[in-house]
Amino acid sequence: MIEENYREVEAKVREAAVRSGRAPEDVTLIAVSKTKPLSDIEALIRIGVREFGENKPQELKEKYDQVSTPVHFHQIGHLQTNKVKYVIDRAVLIHSVDSVHLAEQIQKEAEKRGITAEVLIEVNAAEEDTKFGVTLDAAPGLVEEIAKFPNVHINGLMTIAPFVDDPEENRPVFRAMQQLLLDIKSKKIDNVDMNVLSMGMTNDYEVAIEEGATMVRVGTAIFGERNVK
Ligand SMILES: *Cc1c(COP(=O)(O)O)cnc(C)c1O
Image (cartoon, rainbow, N blue to C red; front, side):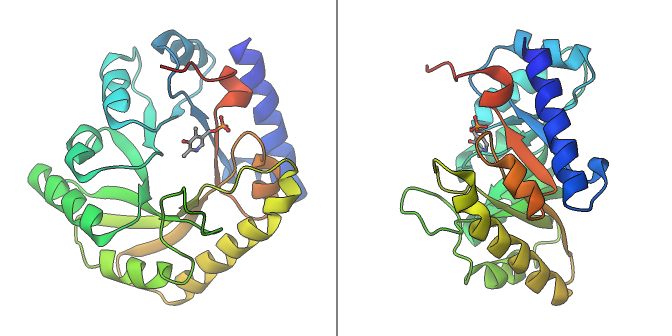
């Protein structure tokens, strides 16, 4: 069931990539396994899936430590400074960096271990009160500040678009993100790459890809409704 769901989403991801004039392999599908048991992850590992997303640092740590095969885990949810230690050498990419304060803690923990942390800057593109992330206007300044940390490498941007009935409503949000990515890229800031655009979830990943997403984070369409704890 989960395997079939994954295959279906994967096919739609490929079609959307081709529709937008890109190669299917330019878009990475992240299976968002938050709240789901390890057995669900193992089922997908058996069919070759290697990219998983978690929003709680401790849950990412537990699953990372228990999984049968080394796979990539993405920290996609809000990260508090005191939880950086759980994900710093486990998450392949931290999608949710939205302050200098958090980046400073990531710098400390990365330096301690002699590694470079790969991160994205989270942008609250629709400026919703309920969401984390920096505003579109403040994003370039934040990127420049965080670029100064030698053990923190910015790879691009992430956003969580509003929950809407019609995914078309989010097209302008995704378009603004793509434009922001290009604007920051053109500044050619040292220690900054703008190659990753993480946007699009179950309801709107196809529109997100059409507007330039290089990573989509899909949970419900693959695993079914979340298990509430
Ligand atoms: C839960 C979550 C997702 C996946 O949401 P679905 O609508 O279930 O696909 C994507 N990104 C983040 C940051 C999330 O927390």
